Image (cartoon, rainbow, N blue to C red; front, side, top):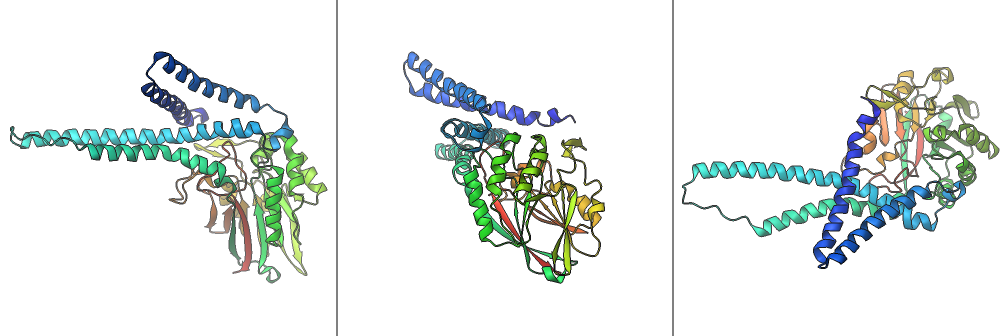
Length: 418
């Protein structure tokens, strides 16, 4: 199925949400304003604010790039409210559709039940009138369900995107040399420097990472989002990372889409951070070592539609980077490279890319994450015969500056001999 048709339902829900909630707001005001002139003025103001906010947001996307790496009043007063409304209203409209469907089913069942009762009961027996209290209760539940995405969106904007978690994950590897038993790797991913992930915020996470005292730091891509000119800011902010065995990294799909791969590699090299691009390096302790490998976003600057899912070229030639007889650890931004990595016998893959769904309900069920539409590896630890994978939720955001049910994450791995 062509890409555009697979995302057409999302577009229709988005447009439906805008029309539905603007209509609800206007209808609410009209019911409470008696004079016609006042009604016209209220509706005009609502539509004017919506159109103006949309126009200002779209115009703001063309601002100078240095302004896009720090938050401004325009971001606070225009971008944040606009994005909160867009994503919250879209999710809320999906709830509305579910409520409508449930009501339709309930109405059909009620009508059938009434018909059966009329046929079975005496004619003189009259039906009890519907309970107003029950109707009000159900309407209250429906209203709360529709309002929940707006409340959750506000939470994700003001708190969820900043509520960073430090996850400590033990990893047992049979081929791990004895000298590295207890070796600690800290991973940061999906930085997405921008107005909602400023250099100061990144430096705060850098300080937190250093305080965890890892032996090695791994960075797994998406340092920028769309613009290569923001690369110096994110590199400078990350330059304070320190670890005895160095800071190593791989690049992500946004780094590729922004044509920033070479620039990021060069800038990081000046700070002592090495990007592994289809490369390997031995991490040595005395006579022992393990093999650390890194690849670009599956060696491709584009994503391909394969089998109805977003996919990409898979680790071509990575077997030539492996070292037999010791642990092999791979930095690969895309978790979908894991099946191939496990097939090759790569002991551990560290990935990011998904943001854990970013707007997810994984606290209810791991299945309730948008990223599951494109990958089964949304967040956390996975295992297959031949290898293990951990998917870091990242610290930044994309599109909506909100996180719900998928808090930002710094992961600390403790490598243990199995």
